[in-house]
Image (cartoon, rainbow, N blue to C red; front, side):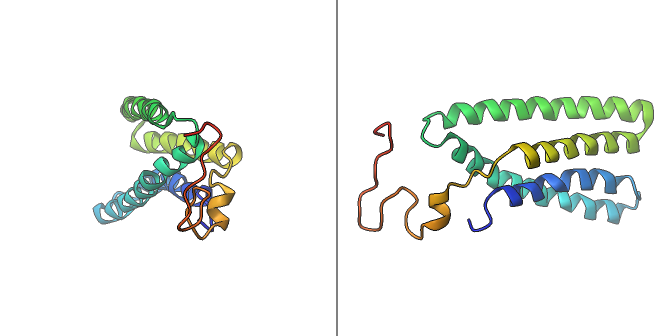
Length: 148
């Protein structure tokens, strides 16, 4: 919480273009397995923080589940298109071109997140040592503006 979510999420996003570039440098199987480990780190960070960031954004709206469904649907479409586009590029221009294209797309996502996504961690979470719902230990939580 002291760092916030954005810097850690950016590490996860930054691993993707790095991995795409590293794939083009050498075709040794041990090297490729090592580079593939980066994907596990990036996916771990993304998998852990995605739901927290979404909860931060949707806080107090009561629409977390629909937002999650919408984002995961768009992600599924992106994953499908990624395979289609990379396959076409690899067929016509080679694997290095496919990896570099996907790395460029990932770098674009990194830059969009860096420049346009604010920190989602709420100030009360960063400064509070007790519960994040506004109440202190032993005290009932305060209701938000919608009375929920």
